Length: 290
Image (cartoon, rainbow, N blue to C red; front, side):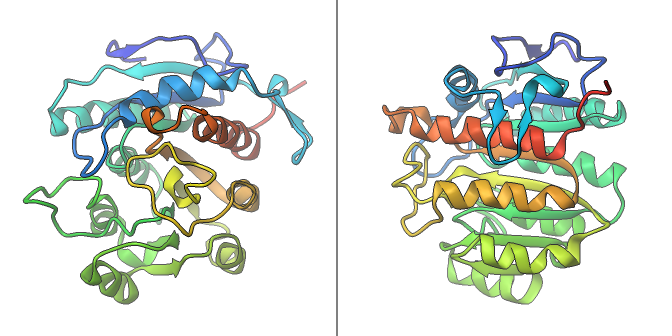
């Protein structure tokens, strides 16, 4: 693993051996372009910390982390304020994980980190589709003069893979031009997550798929600890169901972003994020050979 990845106490159940791991979890504590409330750089560490309050066994999936081999590599050390160098470093780490035949699971940090990982996934997986679970469309061409921003990340993804390969679920906020762009150029499903996802799974089977989950897709009554909370979202139960629904797809990478601990002293946002990480490992990872 590259020398600018800093090791911290790992996510619950993490193995000690990168070489043997199937799934590699990495924190990308970048928080430079957030337009409302900062703090997402603290997300990866808190998600790890609260993970120890959960069981390693999933009642829904009837699977146990003890039967899976995943490695928590720690957080990427990012130069504060340098968006392009941070994206470069995130991309280098993602490229190394993918080249090793492992499944990248990234914790943000702001949503812009997803672009660096998706860019590397697109190089290795021709015909890549992206499932985007979010309250916000993130489709601005630029935001306050910035081409790369958490508000433009899915526009950059659409530029990269083609808009019709982008599937957006749970969207309930965006500027008029974003929503108009989405209706013309992407696969946009507003407000709901589970029902439209279930209806569109058939179109994604057999393709490589990357999943990007912004925690604010969940209603702030369940997940208040995020920078740009948006009322009217799905429940905690529904977002867990969404992860399980994607188990039949060829998912090649996953990220969970925008957890901001400062705004949730109850820690329920981080707990939900940690449970989603557990379910993602058990859904998309491969069990150890016995």
